[in-house]
Image 1 (cartoon, rainbow, N blue to C red):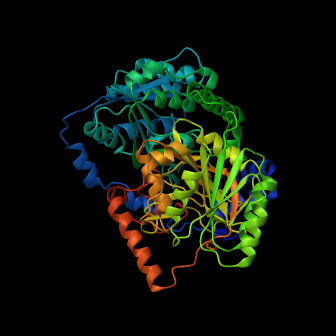
Image 2 (image 1 turned 90 degrees about the vertical axis):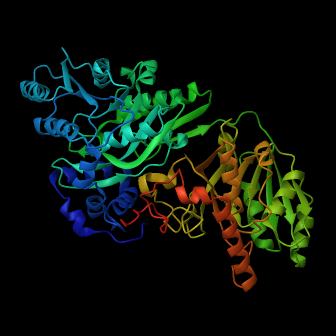
Image 3 (image 1 turned 180 degrees about the vertical axis):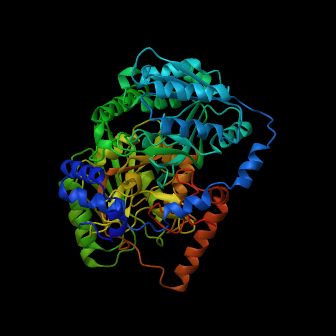
Length: 608
């Protein structure tokens, strides 16, 4: 069961007939255990509380004034399109006021009003358009549904770029300024998206910041993480044909997929520029209210896979609006599992037994690389293993060098795919090989990593982020395994800069294309460096949480417990700092500059 304290005071403050009803709906859907886990994740104390952080983060009046006075070399017109339907007057006014407060001036607001009988809305729209010519609106004869209402707003737009805004949400005053700044620097950008947060209906509190990575295709196939604010070049919007009503409920998800498929350059601005208002009718506050939307989201992902020439089965996860893609394995290629070993008979036996007893994929070979073992029991076990057709024993009699050992074994391997595995692993999910192989067979993917647990069920590895703890660190270390973490990231397929080689599958041709592991990195960071070089060649590194194993960590080598080991570790840190200096300075593109580099749980980086 979930560990950690609950902030009862904060939870009691949120109690109302509506939140009690909402809690009851969640309880019915998830059951007691899952409900309790989610309650903990929602109401544990924030290490850096977002409310005060956001107040210190938002631009001062002085900064906003300076932005208003900027002279632009390139000043694209940005059309913000809004489908409006039965919008409460207060929300409508605040949405339009948020546009009028923009520090960048070359915009237009195109509102399609699908409530022709609502006199209050018409009066408000007439009033605003009379004193600001940039605000335009059109009365529709009927409510055509969100997709067609939006298309009517698209038809009004004359801008170079088109941005999407919901009728009850708000833009930060510097939102369009930041978009225009990015476009002035790089005029070939096709698609831009920003970070966002949620805001109470009465605007009393900002909460749940969504701090996003740069473009992440596998994360997009797991959840519409791009969402708000989304801005696209006019030509691409026209090419896609706009929204499609058969995807109503997830019409923006389908549209975003088709836009990014047609985009050459996708740009992410890691700033909170969109405020998603939560109230009883909004999906932001009541995800259970729109099951049809999640079905439409599933179909949007299926459409993207089909257009990308990929064969994958999309299913819902237990969290609404989050999905899993299972890529079907094509044919049955040989997978070479490479395991370095020194002594540790019991550990190795547990690993080998779990592979044979649990794995449903059968076309594999195991290469055990013996490295200076001393005990009779391990050699006795090797003799036993040598009778197994699928196992080959190799010998490396030089000093331990993780990179060199694996490079040596890779040359001896016969498989089209190499699966590097520590000797202290135990398989949990029977389809772990198929799960990784399905991803690895994709043309765009070079490496796939797994989700690893300590023997007590807490997380040991859920992806690796560059810069954490200095050079690189695993995410969600020690978090209870039943939890899914910040925006469910521990449990979602996604692209990352690196994964651990404790369990890592690589295309053989990609491995040799980058000349394998760096042999100057004998123990630490060799997997991180390898992943980064594969990424540099343009391949994806995918983290797949549905391939699960136990990791009885550090039995394969000792700790840094003597001067020589400490010196070696320091030299490996220096090597990484020199080789990847630019990346370490600029930050991991799959992380976010507003997140901590000293914590492993996606907590906020304190304001400086």
